[in-house]
Length: 291
Length: 192
Image 1: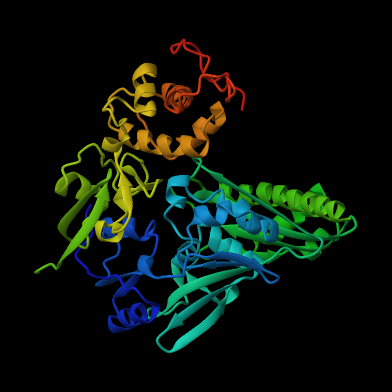
Image 2 (image 1 turned 60 degrees about the vertical axis):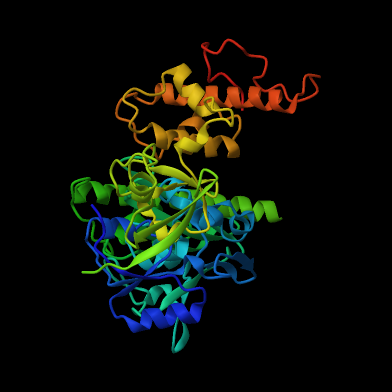
């Protein structure tokens, strides 16, 4: 279990990194490496060059502003998770991050890296999709922004081009009247989830005016379903059941070693109801707290 | 293929080393093969088991998921660096010995490094926090009960040592666990 040989570059500046990446179509970016290194060790991936961006300056910031939470490429999951500003501006990011692997992995793994690794079983790609966030990528021909809805092309496949580096991700902040929920079921704490569900619910008084639900591990890509109409303005056992059935129509749960497809469908029903309830409670309590 | 070699400066347990390795040399292998620091164990070699955990700038990380070339400029602490400066066992090591926190010992180096860092963040963990602290490390012998006990005992020992090293005997300091000297007794009753 040793990686195949590769050429290695550790640039000290972004321009140098972009040139190194552009020079070799088989090159790959190394940030935290918590997903990439196992793939290399098992020889499921064998890039000809690794461009190690860990030496790049000023790429580790986590900041918040009126638009939301902005995470730069080298910010580790642990740093984002520990930020009180992130928790205040977009609590769903914090909530979901606590489910990302174990603390030791979070100390090295990067949030942006996880997003562009585009694993549909991972938490942060789904959270970016659910919140309608975006990723900023840059290449020798300049930067561009990819909206989450355009980011995921297939299993472990994003629309980031091989010569581009994802330099940051932005998550919109929590809007007025909004609340969030997140839950997943895994065989063991810290493992990849069999199914995971997140929700953002907006209320006006006790009435639900908008509700979106995001799903991980239930399709080839993260899936977001708008369940506003299915809820019909309320969060109740029957309305959340209707939301779950609506969502199932958009999902393609697979059978594998860990769970049957039928069990995953059942998790969709149960978790959708739970997170919608939790997000509704969260929204109501935030509105009361602000009043 | 003629593989390119890199001169890598690594600081391990306070000592600077220069080694010449290919880029694909895992940090775990660099520690064991190149520096002969075989205390770091390699179990699954893909980040699941936690046996290879070392401290990188004080934070626990999987040494099997890092390349040695990527660890330049970092301060690395392996299990060999956890002993006290006089060569006696560090608090976590002492606690594992007292509480039978190990059987075959293969996973132990990863637990010791992880808990050492964990107690820095959470000096007096509850039993639940102790379990959470070691949740990313696998042990196939102990059933974890004595490991959790060891975490709590290590917290007591570290507290005692801190009191001794600051020479504070006037009783004005904290009272966390420093009065308990029974060692073998039940732990885990400590309030958060």
